[in-house]
Length: 483
Ligand code: GLN
Image (tube, rainbow, N blue to C red):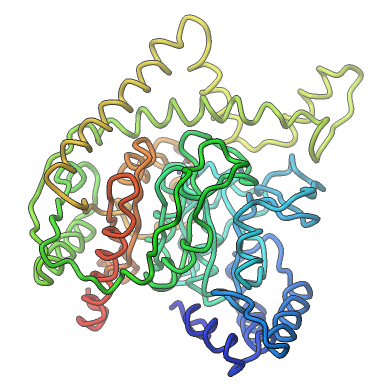
């Protein structure tokens, strides 16, 4: 899989030197999309004409002696909750029907400045709430490795787009695992950066204290390249970290000699399938063979993450989604009074999972319950930070599975929200802490489907995290991609 026409870094180098035209690169990817998109449904919208026009513009710049930038001519797919000026941005929800943002997200601006070419907007669970992309109002995305299985979610369209070779790069958003879990299930690399490293300006808000935008790629080097382009301070996001961007791609070859790696024992038990645990242990062995000092460590509070997250995230969502009122954006269902119009619009416009979250969140925040639910969840968040801090005194990075299982069948977990929520048990703690974490493919499970291993690091620990990911990737390649 990931059988696209080549890595982003190679495409950019060839386009910048004039060895390949951006137009040819785009046409090649559009052909792959034509072939497989009907069965995958990774996209809500393919921007074929816009992409071709943009490629021609890049080729003209190269011909004129200009350098279009580090992602020159590289096709990229954008999760459809990132604002694109004049281009429908749906969040895979009926409620945004017809809305075209009047501005670009900061990451979209930075991609343009770097010479990248947006080929389409990708499918997601409505407003990024879900773990399978089955909560999309426009129908599910399918896993390119096995179309009877889900691609994971909520950024399932972006993960599937990279896995199917529709684009070498994609952007997603990760609130509780929505980049890493679909990356794991689709066999690609997915990175959730430190909270504040990438501007959230123009990302439609789900849970603002947790949301981060991050890259999908077929390789760790490409993910690092993309992260360098989108990272960095933005005055339009008050939570953006005012600090120059570190060199990431250049540090990938540094290896893990002497690096202290903790394998999180608490995430090798509860509900994690045997084959996924085996692959995680194999990854730990590979790091040890590469010179890292590997030990098991308990980070007890991580097991409380799921419960805290499913109070904090819905609480923030209930407030963020109040703006979709039939007046300011998209859909309006008319009714005699303003109140009735809002009720009718929200009833018709939101899907079941979004309504469930709004009700959960409103309840958790209501007077009399605030301390017992939201307040308590915030205290758990502090415990998680404390336990991580203790672990990071002894370790540079932590290792765990990304997702408890490989890709499950469509329809398997839609009947019971709780079984769906359990997918996020390994990924949520890093969001609650604001720490970076990534998923790296590390072979296959008993069913032959991809398994991802999660590398976590303390805040702004991207370099050590990506170095570890690069060593895992090289080790797996050395084993011939074995199980
Ligand atoms: N699956 C989690 C949820 O449903 C995480 C979603 C996300 O990271 N956007 O909330």
